[in-house]
Image (cartoon, rainbow, N blue to C red):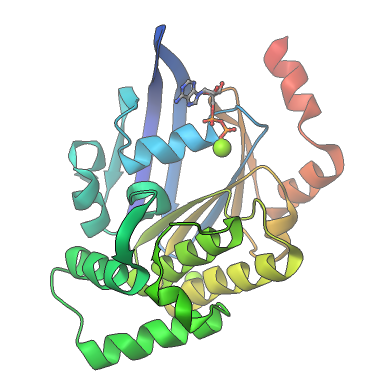
Amino acid sequence: MSTLEIRDLHVSVETKEGPKPILRGVDLTINSGETHAIMGPNGSGKSTLASALAGHPKYEVTSGTVTLDGEDVLAMSVDERARAGLFLAMQYPVEVPGVSVANFLRTAKTAISGEAPALRHWGKEVKGAMENLRMDPAFAERSVNEGFSGGEKKRHEILQMELFKPHFAILDETDSGLDVDALRIVSEGVNRAKDTTDVGVLLITHYTRILRYITPDFVHVFVDGKIAEEGGPELAERLEDEGYDRYLASAQA
Ligand code: ADP
Ligand code: MG
Ligand code: MG
């Protein structure tokens, strides 16, 4: 079993006016096999948390720790984080013109696992995973992210997660911009990964609807750069009914 531990994390973002503090002491522990949902209003710092975990250069950790089985994640390069078993979709370049999806997947898999996957087995695995996600085989020959629709980006993200078999996957707004059919297909992909591996999932979302398809073990409400409340799946149901107003009112008070 693996554990991803975030302790009293403070993060500032680089702006023209200087560093702006966003995260104000985030504490979160995720074990293998657990699914944690982070929910919260827009601007509460959810994506900042994902970016900091991904090692995005614009986000500076000013204090606190992140460890993966005791190893200091914050001291790792982006590549080292991936090799340690962290999956964050935005670890990878937004657009890689001229590099096909098929080549990208094989290169990334090789970098993450430390050896090139056996060709025939790998080909089958990619084909199977793409079929499961109802992706057109021609997608594999397209340039990475070049002209991808929102839905294609999300499917490509889940395809990577299924193929790279990370210990922990951080999925930021995987549900945004998906119609109900695409949402179901993408959610099935996440659930397949949960069933076939022991992946721990951090599912970051503003809306509750994806949680009808992916049941979280824990729900954390994120307000103003930190966790304001924690609970089980019933907390997501309450948020669906009540929204975030009560948290915003108390954050401003
Ligand atoms: P969420 O994902 O919860 O909507 P974000 O983490 O994207 O929230 O943003 C949190 C706050 O940090 C917002 O006020 C946002 O404007 C600010 N912020 C995030 N990234 C940047 C950036 N690159 N430059 C300036 N401000 C930023
Ligand atoms: Mg499981
Ligand atoms: Mg966001």
